[in-house]
Image (cartoon, rainbow, N blue to C red):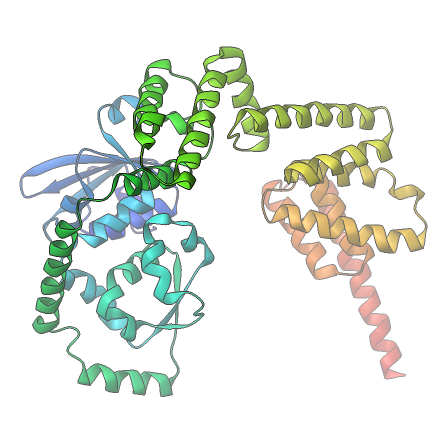
Length: 455
């Protein structure tokens, strides 16, 4: 990213492979505009978080001229996106790579043909590559060369989008793979011709089977739509109600799986469709109420996605319990508050509830004897570490964790926590004092141990 920085918001134009520029900017959560200059044509591609807006299909970006150049700007507004098609960022990148000339992808991968790679767990969450990843399931170390025949595009996508890491081969492995490479024609024109022939064969088979049954069509529709993330997204909305858009999507769903369309389908598919239609109607009526829609927005910011009326009512109940627990903590009923926070966490798995539970439990720490401390400190430490894996800890929690590490004589981890606090707040005297004290007593202990060992 460092070499791109001087080009951002300047009149300089970058000469770089588009997919590489796109992947680099996406990995840094860049929000802005890439202007593409290719063969006399100029057009924008807008990035914001993990989304992309473009008037051009990914296949056209996969076939850009090698002489194409790009200008990068970090300023965007909603007007720029108007009328442009929205895509998922990673899916957009994948389709660019799918449409790139074979030789352009292989020229990048060829230097790594004697190496291995490992796929990160996050890749399994992407539905558009799930089928392509099946050959690699269960493998921790995958040889690049043996995977190039059919999977070179998905390998390139995984590596460039940082969903896979390169694993260097040993000298012995390198020799064996090089021998296989020398006997192989994988980078030859013959292999390219075979790929074209196979693609044509697939297209013919696809045309033959193009007419799918009505049941399969309904199943495909349900499979795609049942994966909705929240009540707004079900109707193509981001986070607030728009009656025009929601009604259009609701009618679309009704037309697709209305009971009249289910004649002749299997009982299981009919039940799925009826249940989903009922759920859709319930969600539509729910978010049409402006007060309820605003309440759902508020609750989703605190607890995550809400997908149905029953979930909404349940989360509303938990939010009320959260306020009750907070009130109990304020009046000093720490044990009661901790029980309520624990209940909320067990029901919702919301890390904030677990953090609040441990913060109120810590208020009781001065009352614990040595035996109680030994157990409770470890429990609180484990909980705070668990929380830190899914969200940032508050500074109050970080101080508690550092203090527990100090008590358990885990100085290395204690110093890591204090360094993290000081990085965010360089003038934090409390963290600086704790760090100084921890280092002093640790050095003192080491010196005493050293003296004892000499004796």
